[in-house]
Image (tube, rainbow, N blue to C red):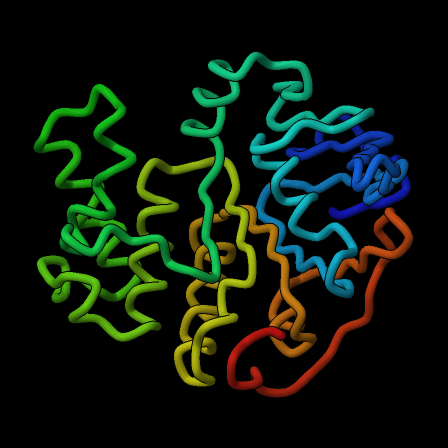
Length: 247
């Protein structure tokens, strides 16, 4: 279930109410989000679309606890994150959020295995437990045979799959994807989208994705558009993913 009118119940995994975000530019207020509501149930795959500057990435940052709203509330899995301290938010993000960006943000001097293991170094897992987690997720993304390769030895699509493995290795509550296919060719983009679909269908992950490309958005279960600071329901598209993923 995905709703944008504030009518979702307490069973929603993600619940956003009356969210405002205002920035100041040259002394003038810029209202990016205005009274936005959103309810997302577990296991949903949602795409956010809208023109550049409409607030898509701002919304992802707020949902991921990377920014704080001007007004309103965000509740995830029963945790109201809006007024958490910085240290509490850091702990909450590590436990609940997996981030996937257009730029892979892999550390070039570390292997695929070591890049994926990084989030687990902050946990109390033993070395053997970490290895089991890392090998499992690298197998899920189809890179078990590339785990000891460095980023420079991988294709762009493979690098993004390492990023996805890193995002899911700590079993987060949900994934936030900001233009995950934006830097990929058509074949690699299609492989990444198929992987995200598998994470939802087989592993019951909740995925929230920003994209400019309607063909990429069509792979999600629900498409929402940001218009004038609020979310409205979008339309379904069909067709292959365009090369480059998003504009």
